[in-house]
Image (tube, rainbow, N blue to C red; front, side, top):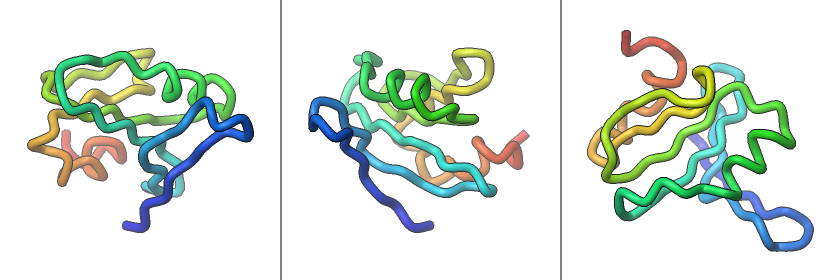
Length: 89
């Protein structure tokens, strides 16, 4: 799966990775701890009508924001495509 990064025109917001999953553009934010603050990711979701987004960290799996934001543990990031496309469950 090709991955890209994104920065806004002011360089104040950035997304770690942008992936294409099942014809969707999916922003992916990577956190090294349980800290789930992701201001740039939330701004990207709000400003780009994003259908799905992923935040991966040491926190447990959960789905937030009405099914848009998937919190995926770092150890299961290899299954990100299955989670987001609905093939996992």
